[in-house]
Amino acid sequence: MKLRKILNLPREHGAWAMLYVPFVLGVLTAGGVTPAALLLLASASAMFISRESLLAWWRARARGRESGSAGRLLATWLGLAALFGAPLIVVYHLWLLIPLALVGTALLAINGKQALELEDRSIRSEVLAISAMTLTAPAAYYVIRGVWDQTAFWLWGLSVLFFSSSVFYIKLRILNLNRRRQERRRQVWQHCALYHGFLLAALLTLAVTGRLHLFTVIAFAPVMARTFLTLIRPPAQVNLKRAGLLELAWSLVFLVFTTLTFRPV
Image (cartoon, rainbow, N blue to C red; front, top):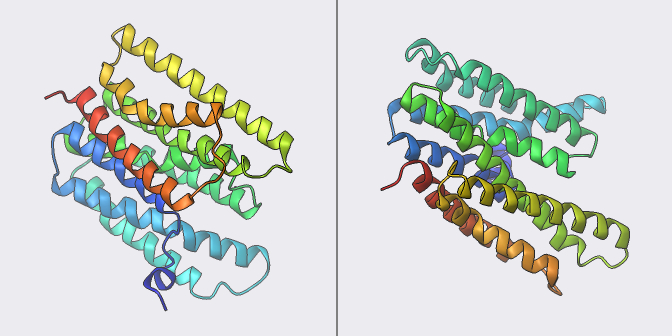
């Protein structure tokens, strides 16, 4: 039996990037790795992994079935999250992590409920999940700097906007192949165009007014370009593996240039 199945690890490769790229962004912006940051990484990872076991346990309970190993795995992962997270409060006195953790847990719980109701693939649900996972950016920044300032909010907001782009884009790519769902394709096309049009206008405005560095626009440039090209000229086919690898590459571009935005060399 594969290790992923034994430990009930998340299957979506993109979700791992949504958790770890913002974390690295927070670390690089704050100035480097610390023992407290490593504890945060371990705790956040365990909490993230526990979601799969939570969904399995939740579905079993809702259907009146035995949850099998899901309940034990859920307790294990949550226990590890608490074990690694407790020193951040007790030893390092990073009290603001408590409301941050509560917000993240609430967002994931809402997303889990939507998954139970088979609504986890909606745009709203996926953006909620992204909003929870990308909290690793401000959390890492706060844990290393020991202060909560405007930069922490920028790191979170930009991370949410960046990874939400992939939600609209991937849905557009997939629905472009389904000629029988014309109305749904039209709706997704419109939502994708509106989102990225608003995003481009907002980024340019922030750069022109000096609120953010031009590096921020560069950080988003690849995902903006790939989206507008697809909106104008949809490809005849989609290779999901290749698309996933490209999304990972664009996330690294985002990581580098967003770091330069807040920590210029």
